[in-house]
Length: 419
Image (tube, rainbow, N blue to C red; front, side, top):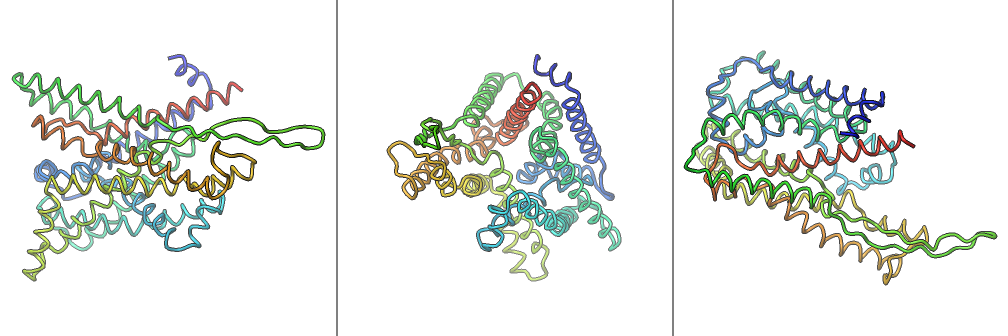
């Protein structure tokens, strides 16, 4: 409470908080404006029967489940960022811009991601609308209606990308994460209402067990989000003129979860594409192609295959994202240039190999943890049979991570103003 009072006493911080709250209001209003020709009854039935699309809807702030003008959420921008980061491994010139171009290089790289967002939004918007029209959710549209709807949903995706960047500029958390957080929290009252309507007193102990599992998940998320391995670093003494410098000891923090919630968001973006492609060909005039597409679509919707794919993709993307954000080679070079060394490890190549070995072991714990959290709803539903209000492990992870990040950013801002 003391920190909250201090935040609102500092005019600049207070303005930042109100600005972000205003943007969240704009986001929630936009997510309540539907595109034309939607059959609300069939739309509700479709999302109740489709697990993957229900989960994707969470990340669009509920915009997809109501087919709003921001139905795509931040999906196209996130997918564009994934593609650009994958391209850095193929094209050395892109890697040089991203890793060694400084702030100007990162700004240029981000601009490419923004430009890629527009064609991806058009593609994803067309895929979603085609799928939903075949399910009878969207009424038949003529060419002009198709074009206008696609332009609107693409503009909605670009609008959210811009709003997210405006939030990030205020240095109170990551804009993308905060928008997704707002969407998750907006769906919480509806989930509570649905649980109240379907409450069964005979399953009281099951509900208690569910609450305990939810609490354990929250504690686990906080613990492993904050967990880090401290690597000791000593600096040799150096004589400059008549003075001696160095001789101090410090440590290099290596977090268990370097990637945050990004691997889960990446995995969801990738899981979406096979189902969309299968639905494209499901209505093909060639019977063999249509049969194969329907078989693949049914296979993707299988809960066991879905859970296994989701878990594996989260683990893979955790290693991928960690490799981008934490480079042992450059860290080793920086330590050596500053006259530092890890006790018992030779500077240079030996230090790089030691950091790689340690990073792989620590990341394994974080990757498996993220994977288990991602498939937690399926595990809980399998044991308890409760489907009305499942433990959204992914949602809990995002909510807790965003709250912790915002708290740290606010602490840093308050400390800066005090100094």
